[in-house]
Amino acid sequence: MRSSNPVFSRRGYGREGGNAGFGAAPQAGGPAAVQGNPYAQPQAGNPYAQPQTPTNPYALGDQHNLSPDQLQQMYGAPPAGPLQTGRMTMDDVVMRTGMTLGTVIVAAAVAWAAQLPIGVGIGAALVAMVLGLVQSFKSKAVPALIIGYAAFEGLFLGVISQYFNERWSGIPMQAVLGTMAVFVGVLVAYKTRLVRVDARFMRFVLAASIGFVLLMAVNLLFAAIGGGDGLGFRSGGLGVVFGIIGVLLGAAFLAMDFKQVEDGIRYGAPREESWMAAFGLTLSLVWIYLELLRLIAILREL
Image (cartoon, rainbow, N blue to C red; front, side, top):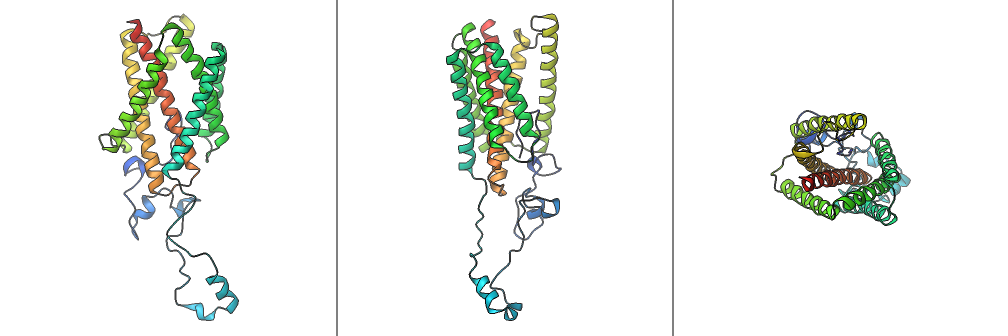
């Protein structure tokens, strides 16, 4: 499971067939148990795969050939059951997400109260980007990297929010309320199946996000060279259009995050994957907040 940020890859997506790259729901004894569950594929080298036919210590067969010591050891072992430990649960995802978002909020509050200069905020953003990229290329979640990303991202958000608030009073609170509204709206739409996250949906969102990021990078480059707002993608009517597109992309990232959490719990992803779910949700919420911050500022100028 990888994060939903368009720059980062996502584990569990990209195969042909099935929603978001996963197959149909697994059926007992059927091939979907192997094809549909990304965490139960022993032939693909999955370290989390479990044997499809657990050993039955009470099965008849060669037990009459066992020695008394072997029989005592076998019947003294812990009983086998259907329950599996160390699997991701919704409580794990909520707790880890609370930790990462809490770190972002605390760091932002510290930056706001300390009135850090804009240069410090830009530096914190660069550090956060590096930590996020390092985590994205890791095969497993590293909590220290994720918490470090959240801390530096929070410093950047605190600095940039204060800057916007000085020019347009009250904008940060409006952006926070807007982010919460988008989160609740996407969650309701996903739960009621108004939004269906499948492979086609994911490919479209990734393609759109890549184009969006490239356009913003070109706009930033022209702004740095020629001054002003570059190509005008962040001002006036065109800025409003791109701001709305940015918010919609963030909402799509959230829907894919919800799909990842749902599939991870359904298919028994290991507990540490809840850190990656929290990482992805944090990235998506930060994206939405920043896009709303810019969009509201543009609307204030019109």
